[in-house]
Structure formats: structure tokens, C-alpha cells
Amino acid sequence: GKFQGAIPLETMTFKDTWRVLERVLANKDPRKTQVMIYCTGGVRCVKVGAYLKQRMGFKNVARLQGGIVSYVRELKDQFKM
Image (tube, rainbow, N blue to C red; front, side, top):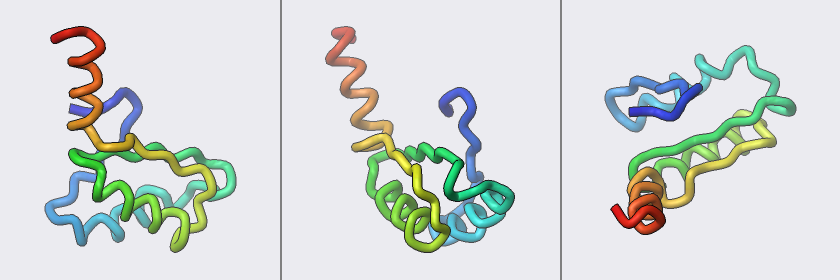
């Protein structure tokens, strides 16, 4: 699944992420574009966030802390699922 408005990278391996990010965000202004990232457990997002900021110059980068796993756990706790 994905969040509404999300653009899945459709990569086969994590090392493909950098090339695909460069392509997907090529025409976006790093100073004005807001990027929200999420992954399964949160670790990859930390690396991707650093890449977006340090290598690509994006200023407004946020991530789903703890990934989808933590998000689902939070929802279960909230709604007693």
C-alpha cells in the first residue's frame, strides 16, 4: 500500500534508490519542494533523508519516524485494534 499522493520508487534493491530519487526529483526545486519519506522500519528513511538534504540540497524533508511498523503499532494502540 501507499499513502495518498505518494510516489513509489519501485526499486528492486536499496542501492537503486539514489538513481531513482535523482530521476523522480529532477525537476523539483530543492528550496521549495516538501518531501515526506516513509519505509518499513525507518532505517532506510534516515539514509534517504540525509541523501536528499546533503547530496540533493532539499531543505524541507520529513520522515515517518519508525516507519510503517511504528505507524501501524500507534494506530492499533490508538484504536485498540
